[in-house]
Length: 140
Image (cartoon, rainbow, N blue to C red; front, side, top):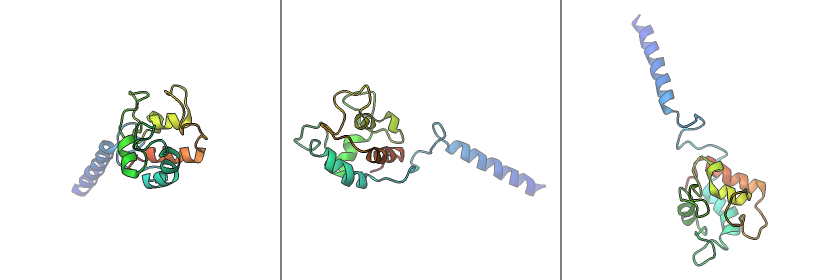
């Protein structure tokens, strides 16, 4: 009988641990990487340096530097946007609530012009890479 009680207690304990480990809407656990694993290093090389850093660099016309990984991370992640201060530039795990996504998609309600300034707009594949990085937690 003790063996059955022990197994039941073990199963109940496991269920409790799983329930306590869930966060938010249950779609992910904070810190858990999701998506295809797009990294900031890849984004810096493929997108931020060639498309963003010509304006977003020290002394440039852009309000925040995006010319290297460290600067990009510090400028974007968990920082209030200037256009809509109620939105973060990048809110980890939430691309739909990240102002960067709004700007690169040219959404209604943005302040100023879509990015990159003067176009051409980023391809959908590149936008999806940024969304994937944010969805995965916007890790440095």
